[in-house]
Length: 147
Image (cartoon, rainbow, N blue to C red):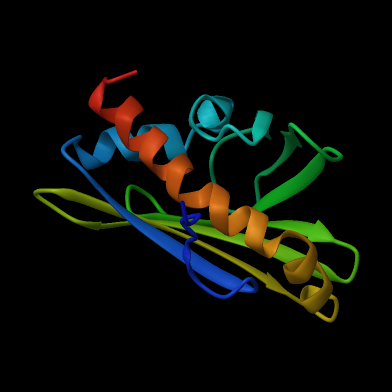
């Protein structure tokens, strides 16, 4: 069986999912880092220091690898946000967007940038691309009340 990968390249990729859940159900989980480990099975936990707002910082603890810090870089409440995690010579950026109603459509975009982005995209890009579609399906299932 062929492995499903998020669309794009190992340096910049995205996946779009649809759900019958209300968009505020998706947003509630996206905007609460304490729940990220419930639907992102690559995470042990995530924590935010303070309110969910631009400039807020937190930590992500993956199942494999070291704990990493992140900062919310942009926020359009109820619609989208972007956060960044610093890496040596690069940043990993994640953008989450709600796209349409009445059927909730949501997109998760990930990209590496900076001088060493080429290295991190080679090391982690394919693995992250493979993890994104099932992660988003899990989020949809939780929002729909199926798990």
